[in-house]
Length: 475
Image (tube, rainbow, N blue to C red; front, side, top):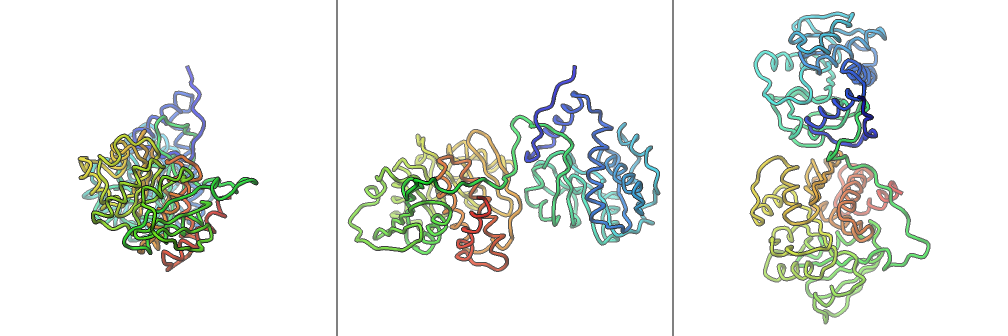
């Protein structure tokens, strides 16, 4: 009996096991493995054709189905009259690969003889769980050195699909990585993702896999309603501390990220900043808990510039005890303990980088085990919070087990203060949407887009100003 696959989901990110399950579901629905291989290989060949632009192509084929994809790619190029040759690292070892090899009508050469402009790596691809060593490693290195451009099919040979770990010494750098069927976690995880310049996806008809992670895409952000005012658009309280600059930077980002009113509660006095950040000072007659008791507050941000002393801890605790939806960033993450979040029901977002993630794991009694995804999900569950695990490979984890990967962002974000800009964006989107997981994803995308709009060599203040352009791109 044939079963209809679920609707196609091009933004899903599948583990090796989930991808295998998705392929089996397609076959159960009536598509055989040969047809899937043809679909994947010919789709990849379109991208190889664009990159090669008529230059000679060498396809390195392994024994498994990734090698079979290589035979299909080579035949598709051969059909177009491209100069193409195959290096068969090992004989075909699966039925589908043997069939694809039998249909290939072009040249097959020894590795030592192969010369060309573009190398297509179909040695192993995804699903690899052992190191690439010896003759196969040397063959890949030698061929990569003799070709000016390199393309990886599904994943470079020597990358662990689910973790992004490297299983080969000195993995070559690729101009393009072509994912087949679905994105894999390694496409968005370090250290793997730094080894290619661009990535593209070839759809083979995989349906939505239950429990699959997804790729963060451009959000749809709507203009304020016709009858909106500053409070209905979202009042944000930014709990500042010893270093006002970081809190002001986060406040600026929050204001430009869609909030209607941003109020900065500094350590010694209360600053209120409207959406255009005309700053006013007023005497600090009000305690922080009193200032946070305003029912109109839609979200609280605490951490940027907070400090780490006893007074900073009290301010963080006041922010959490206010009961408002909250974002904990920077210094607040160093001070945070499990008791601070126990029993909280309001939405909470934590934004740790790698060092802060490790500190939180220690504070919450969590083992530092597994990859970045497993660690972020464990913290999310323990804290009952959405976790934005920041870095060049940013991901968002929800306490219910949902996971979202961020596309690669500009490396120019590696400058002081950009985390404060992200924190302000998270607070703004949380105030507007009321949904922590959705807000976190929107903020991560806007942060990436603001960096793209800012160009090269920007400061955090310049990035914050680019938030306005990023918002425009999402309207």
